[in-house]
Length: 417
Image 1 (cartoon, one colour):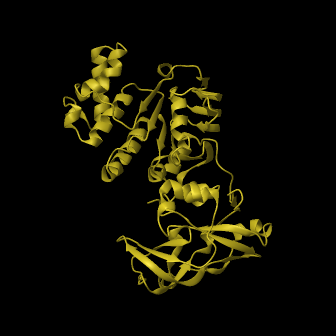
Image 2 (tube, rainbow, N blue to C red; image 1 turned 30 degrees about the vertical axis):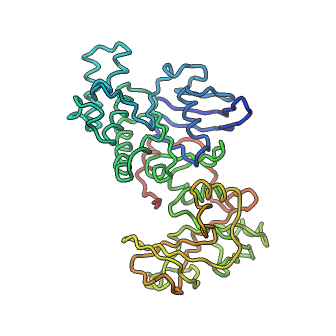
């Protein structure tokens, strides 16, 4: 096993383009870290530099405490699982999984033992004599993982390994990847574009944008304490709602009316009195006002709005409303909208508000309804640089101990999808 440390890592191409800029990240021995971000953010490039498939322009990469910038991929004691299975179609599962060991001149008996141990972990024992064409997509991906496991590397690197699977199989394989990593305890760096994978798999998640690290933290802290506007908008599904607002003492003038600021934001608000900010609320911070009264929810703020659309998901109801007021605008929000395709949807701007309500709600589309919002969950951001105002703690950049990481993994997850 080994820890990984990226010290000021930069990738610069001959034309001057910087795909990764001054990346600093420590990954503890046995930790499972996810790199996530929109297309072109540099996450795959960072992974390829760790693997040795891309040269490092500046900075140092340490694996197990040793600088490996100049080491060939085969000398870094890493194993990589790619998006494509890359299995040899004429070989059986056993032969595919053991091929790297065969090339390394590992004795046949030892090779078979390692393949059979990996097959047991991956529930592939009954498929060892079958060929890839006779396997499902999920089974093929497990064979690709088995090929990495038999090498017993210090580090696993996974580049969007589940993106080719259908939605149901992706959910199943997410749990498999997590179970296997916990059982093996191997340091793992996992790249994904899917923030749901990021929130459900990793001990910590590193969010990247335009080649720069935005925040690295536990999934729960990313969700509840985003460092900036980009992280807040990228993490969570449905995404956080944003709207322009003005600070007026200990209140916030919003399209919902004058909303009381929670105590944790008042110090930051005092220094920004009279300033226009971008406010954010997640969909689950809203509720049908009648249900909120029945549940004796304290504080908060009530308002009325016309409901444009409702979607019943069985366990919850999404109600879409649109309020009068200035649309929140920033480079970060524009980038998120472009990445998700929202910028191309007519009327899909940030002025629309998505609320997540209890299934018992009587709210219906085409009607005016009364809503309650939890002001304690309010976030405010500086519109100029996107930083979160009044955030409770700094970005966590250092890795926790493996015990702390496992404890965090066992903690309840924030909703993500």
